Length: 276
Length: 332
Image 1 (spheres, each protein chain N blue to C red):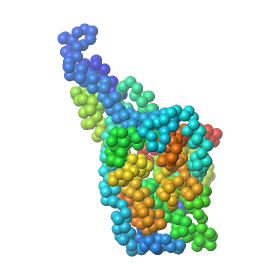
Image 2: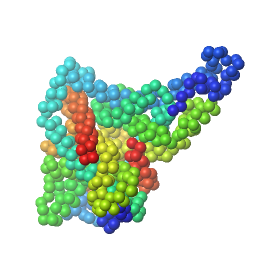
Image 3: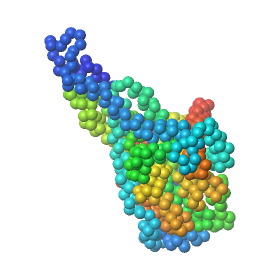
């Protein structure tokens, strides 16, 4: 078949990309005009010169820098934790023989289909009993290790790590953890990078649990701060210029990461699809 | 698989000389015993964190919800009151707002998942060609995925704003009247489904693209020789070959689509967060959330609603799995 793309292929893809990018452009346009211009019945189509003024109003309404710092901290720690514990468990499931290996792995995969995050109230009560509600730790705890992470690392290590290497290390008297650390981790590195990036984005964009557990707390993430911006007294909803300026500011950091590591993210999603 | 039985440890390490070893069972040195313990216990220690986390954020909250859903618990009570049987479930199921939320959730789900999967398959087929700047196209397609759902909701809230939005502006420009995106029920579903489609279509296209790349080129060459056109090849080679992945995408988007919360919550223009002035786009998850803040028996009723939603999600995912598989069997 003519796998060489014709004009139509490029045209259709270009149309799709325009549809993907346009809403972001629109957000910047609205974020850069005055409040009055944004509310006019004929919408603006080109950016205005008021972005920094709107940004200043965002700073007045929400503690943007603190929310940004929290998002970076929470997503970073969660990603590191998911990568470490998922690789450890994935290594055990892929390469070690122990009673219950198969059934436990099936159980973990099955938990991915259960929407556990819906039981908000008991979870909230449990976290306040532990003295965690309103803290960063409360947002991080559900992300210590994930079912997807364990599954992903297991699938990768099954093929990527030869049994002989582990055997050799054990014969040399290396402890199990030492074997993991110096044999499995280097072999797992590419998958670890992808899992880390993916988890970072997932935690960064998470909304419902942070909203619930950080209710009324000084600690907010960028996403919950957007919710606060929306209900800001006397402004919020009606003030589209303010909201879009805030949206742009909350979105830029992740886009910087995307520009730096988007290639790996694309590769990871495609690889996860084959392995999964 | 590595199987370090005591014998293999002993002999392989050569730590127990043959002449000193008792004939039946070699006595292990302290180090060997430690090593054996390490071998036996380590796997359990390594997988334990997952189960601890699952207990804290999955099993316990869901189990406690199930328990609580059979009791009464007044709003300001410190502990739950007497058992009430299935009353909480019956209350939820008879609540007109719950029924609205159920229909809204299913409606939004259908108009977000069906077009999404069709378009994602087409985009994947377009990407599965010898494009110039391949990485650039793939990254561009994925770019909406980088925008958080909360930000997505605010952006589309502005595009679909009733007075100042671009969509209504365009409709006015065409001489049509604008749509009440927040008050017209199907229109509000469409606006919310657009957000979901926007964020996830490119992501799913990449997953489907990965599956398409595994299709052997010879299939296309043979079809081409037989005079099959591109559309025909897409329908009779590409789509059937990516079935398992298509199934995976459908089931995962079902599980994700039915919890929808962030988009409708932030699309709302009133501060009660009830999903439109007349619950036009309140979803099940929003219902659970709001019930937990309601006046009578908030927690038990929210718990009952949680379980109804959990069971619904499991049933619909299973249903979409079986349906897709049956459809694929029939077509093959």
